[in-house]
Image (cartoon, rainbow, N blue to C red; front, side, top):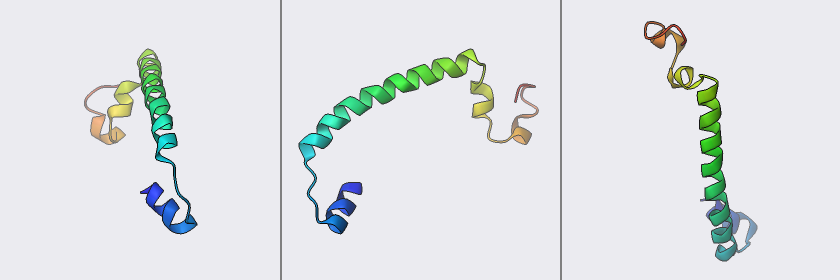
Length: 65
């Protein structure tokens, strides 16, 4: 979608080779970030409140919500 809008509004061509190279770098970086973020949240006991939609909904489940 972004490529389409870029081509349409700016009359600029996007080199797909550059985009594929960038995607090969960004995907592993996002995976590594996700692992480190999950470990950080687990170490801080944060996953449970993160899963709760609203405090009122989880108030009966556990006292930490």
